[in-house]
View (cartoon, rainbow, N blue to C red):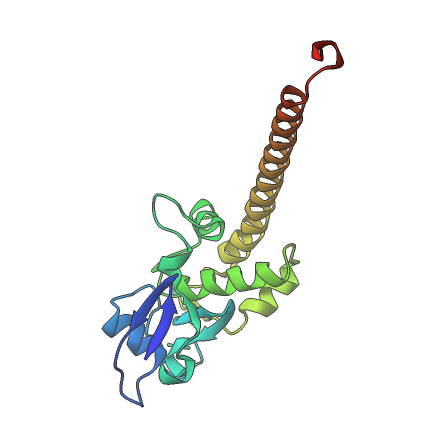
Length: 187
Ligand code: FES
Ligand code: FES
């Protein structure tokens, strides 16, 4: 069976009863998603399936064959963290860190559908992600910080694209003017 995991095609034989979490952690050694309750209740195992947050402990691996799976590892790394990961670092939104995979993945999914969530929106989106350490206040701050960082990233990308487009147009105009012979040069 095949899946696309963090942008790469992977092929693997898994038993019919294997969960997506089993495939990711045991077969692919992707340990970002955590095993918490194993019952779809705590959110520690969250991943994105075609961009939508899902609880990998209750998703049959064979049932999502051919789909695009993104884990915490696929979002960013220590050298180049995703803005949501950076926001959680900035806000020190962790104690033991066990819930963080799910909190980060759920926040990425939230900001994809709602780039400027209110605190109530964030509470609702994360209400089924459990944190036994009680880091909820910092986690909510991290969601707001992530929204700011992502907005800044979008603005930077838009500025870069505009500058690139203008440079391209200027180059085209210059090439056009150089190629066209002037009337004075004609015999
Ligand atoms: S381990 Fe999947 S929801 Fe708890
Ligand atoms: S930081 Fe420990 S479970 Fe959330």
